[in-house]
Amino acid sequence: MKDFSIKQIPTLFSAGLGLAELKKLEYYSKRANKTQEKVLMSVIKKNKTTVYGKKNNFEKVHSIEDYQKIVPLSYYTDYMDYVQRMMKGEKGLITNAYYRRFAGSSGSTGKAKIIPLSAKAEWICQCFGFSAPVGCAFKYFRKQGKLMPAQKGLLTAEIGCTTLENGKTVSCISSVPLLNLKAFVPVFASSPKEVQFVDDDTQMDSHYLKLRFALMKRDISYLTTIFITTLESMFFYMEENWEMLCDDIEKGIINPNIECPPEMRAKLEKRVKPDPKRAEELRAEFRKGFDCSPIVPRIWPKVCWMYGMGTGALAIYQKKLKRYLGDIPAHYVGYAASEAVMAVPIELDSFEYVMLPHNGFYEFRPVDSDDYDNLLTIKDLEVGKEYEIILTNTSGFYRYRIEDVIRVTGFYHESPKVTFCYRLNQIASISGEKMTQMAFDFIANEMSEKLNELFVGYSIYVDHNTSPGHYVMLIETANKVDKSREKEYAQLFEEILCENNPSAKPAVQNGSLGHCEVKFLRHGTYDDYRQVLKNRGANLNQVKPVKLIDNEERKEFFFSHIAEE
Image (cartoon, rainbow, N blue to C red; front, top):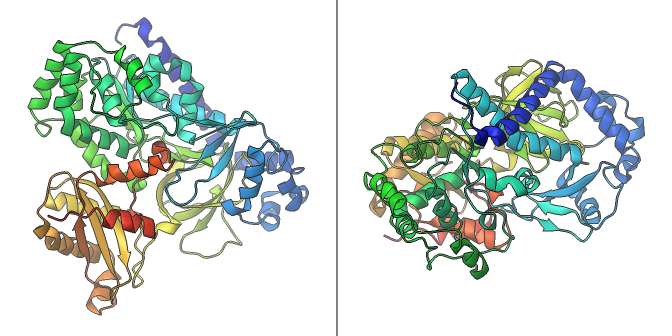
């Protein structure tokens, strides 16, 4: 192994915590069925005196079977009033657990949800959102006979929270690990605190500022993001603006034309100084282009891994990131929501997530069944099948229909390995073809491959105003494509759709499904949409790509951004 460096102490400490949690996961996974029963009974016992527990007869629950018979399925609307009262300081409503934080959903689909976060749930989030990925990376390098290098990373996340009158805080769940480590972030992150920790209403050019401080450093060794779309978008920005970034590094300035609050700008300008040597190093690599070889290993030779959510609806962006990163191994974070961290990968480059049997109780409905009266538990699951997951967490939500569908890919001892497939409310169908988000992702990826064109993003609109109804795919391409090629793209869209959906081709032939349509979006459309959501109060760390245009607001925005020529 390489010689030990004192700079590695923080990294090794974090890796040690992560390895300990992975060992704990192994222990619970070997006893997953029993652990599930214990978790449920503990939750019921601790919360039977709550308002919700009394209302739903928790005192009569003595087994999993009792729970499924007595306690009804629930939706977020069942908790809204309780949560609002909790935010004002009331206790004993849905949970007796100690909590100091609330987690907020993205706000990108309707009104944002606010979820209480128990101390146990927060700890699990801390361990598996921060330490466990480092532990997985440590194991990866150890297998190669290497000691994990000291970690200095480019973090794309903007971390913020709101403090309530009762002292509790509200933030997105992905911010929790770094909020708990705020004092130590400068040790392992390239961005100053002023850029990393911002108020929700802070208006700044995030891509520029994070890249400005990361590019001036030669020792960046890892990359981290919440959704890999953000990292891809940042590198696309770098490709478009590298000359400006290099000029500013050479001069030692924060570009006067970028958006940045005056007080923040004044503080940041004190942190930079002219560095002509580094600027020229970067220019030499950027001038070679972005297609001769991946740019990241050339500008940051020490980068050796990354982490960020990259499966399900985000899978199409892996290819785009590979163009910038090459074969750098990745930790794909896992399957998590504001309600709970539910499954995590236990090694790098794995798209199989091991469910956490100690962080909630899980029930499952096979997607080919409408039976909610006989839900399954983890012992009943079969490899290869898809299930809607129903969650009971440790924070006060019971038999909660999160409306996600997962596929079981295997087992880790008694714990299922899963991958996220799609959200139930993001299925589109015009003539019985029942298109899922995964299916549209596949089609978009195939189109990108066959056309040899990089897609910055795509969205689907189901147009029921024509007779028959038809699918419209709106695409933002990395390179300008002549509008006259829209028909070519549309024909390929329809061809791939019909080849891969047995119901689609006969529907087109018999006239019950209209011909597919493609529209090109103006350059920067998806960045513009993220800015709109940010201006409205959404946390960009939680904003997912818009794959389905399913309301008038989205329709108006995206159709107003169609390229004219």
